[in-house]
Image (tube, rainbow, N blue to C red; front, side, top):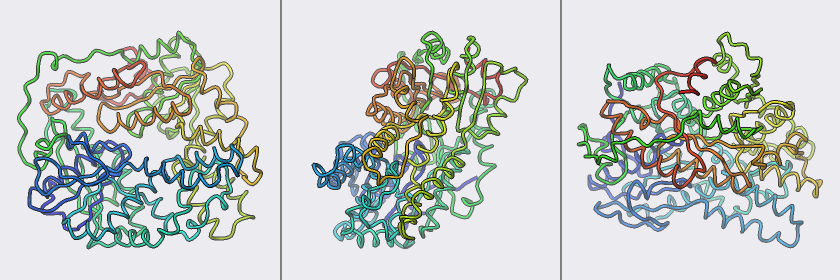
Length: 591
């Protein structure tokens, strides 16, 4: 269907940026590309600025922010830059001068505003800029490969004149988390040169990575359009993890293959406008230099001989154990949390149905599109103990933006409003807007268990906390924390009343990202009670040699979750059909 990706034929720029949503294989593809080019005799520098980077795991070598040769590969150097460390230094640089002169609540608010993903992303961009503008690096390497890329949101911010003003003097709404550009005026010229280099098709190529899955393709299309509008037009797409063949008599193998083919039928038109390549779904873990060398070769890697213990599946509690626990402990608020695509809506819906089956009155509230919810619960079941509400993130964000802009419009000039509008396009804005809507819904439920399919991050909770305190002391802030949010915040921190379920897949990036989510929640004094490992091939009995090989690679991540990260762990096997309707979900919870 698509031509196989081969770096030797398709890479012709000095700078390469790999981008895609978490878990699509950016780092492994970037590493394999770097190794391939180095093996061809090119001098290559591989750089990671991803805060959840697993570059060290993939290359199996300890790395620092200073480039060092990768053992056993001529011509390849690598470095791993932690943007969170850079963000921490930057945060202190901004906040430090105000200590002792502003109230503690104001300092706390400033610190939290500078603790979000946007500050980390800006710190990463600062690192990109330093490398791209370094003459020594430009002359020494044929290719510089980054295993992540700046987002359109960051690049748009850099193009706004007001962004270079003092953020703290311009802040007009208490829940903003975008102060990262303040005090960076001395770097304005450097950043402008960086954006210019990114837009130069002779210097830079953007390689979008996607899985053959609907949500992943949608995200790739969104990123492609966003970056194209800013001028980054030299783009190509790699569909990663395409199952080449399947066993017709194996239910899991057939369903896995068909699901991918169905997703590709809805290939977004925007992506059809660029070169599209593919990489196969492989049976082995993409870690270690030798495994990575196999990725671009057209033959199968020999299977490893497994010990008896490796052939035995790990036994973990099922989803029914999670439901039993919640039923017995009288938990009142249950939140599922996880990155997009891990199946948290299905898990939340299943928990809601399981609790109804145990006689509880349940309200399920979700950000899933209403039409899909109606589809999910479209059978004839009398939902006398189950009520459902749907939060539309787009509507909530629009209403929240209008509220904030309306309050700020009289005090800001045109440039200030442009900056505020971009500020409100940050991911944190959506989290806050959606959380406010959830809080209103929870406030209406007195005698029901409430199951919410999206938990707020610790950053959002702390931002709301600090915004409220900040608002109390500085009337300058026009942001207000609604009463429903004030009432919900302490409930979320009460483990007798509230429980958080982290949903993940047994793969490298989803587990590492879920670990970061958990650390962020702990920072806000919330300890997740359960981890649910969803869609596990390891928990199936597939005979497909490729899928069975991959199932074996899940063992390492299942053990890490069970032994290091989770208070309690449950596992859900990869299932061949989407669970639609109350009856199917009920069966799902008891098997």
